[in-house]
Length: 174
Image (cartoon, rainbow, N blue to C red; front, side):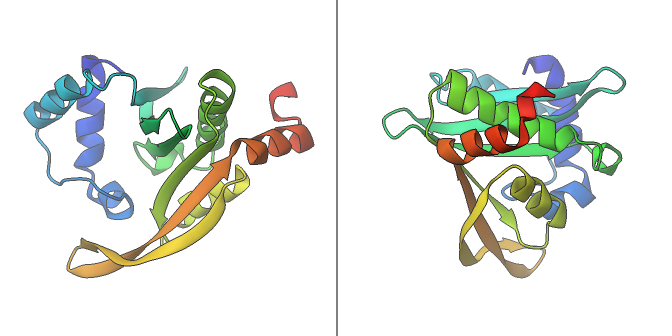
C-alpha cells in the first residue's frame, strides 16, 4: 500500500453502503485525514501489513490487512474490503483471504487469525465460512451505528484449519 492508494481508501470510507456493513470506520473522511493515517501507519514496526487488492481488468479494487500482529502469541487481526458490489461474487474475496492466510501462516509463521463482522453481513459470513473460518462468539450490542446497538460476531482461523482446507481442496494446485 502506498500514498497513491489513499484516494481509493478514502472513497471506500465515504461509500455509505459499504460503511454500513463495515466495523470501525469513521465517516465521513477527508483525503487529508486519510493521508495523515497513512503517515502514522508507516511507523508500525512490522505490526501491521496492508495490501491493495488489484485485478488486471479493474486495477485497485479494495484492501486487505493483517494488523495488531502479536509475534509472541503468533496472532493477527485480518480485514478485507472490496470497493463496491461489482467486485463481489467473482472469487476475488476468496482468493484474497486464501492468499492472506498463506502469507500469514506460511511466510510470517503465525498460528491464528481473527476478525469480526456484523451478523447482517451475509457476504462476509459466506466468504469466511468458505475459507475455513469458525464463529467463536458474539459481542452483544458493542457497536453503536446509525442510532442502533449492533452485535459483532467474532471469527477466527487456525493454521491447522488452513492446512486442512488446502489439503482437502487442493486450493493451491488449481
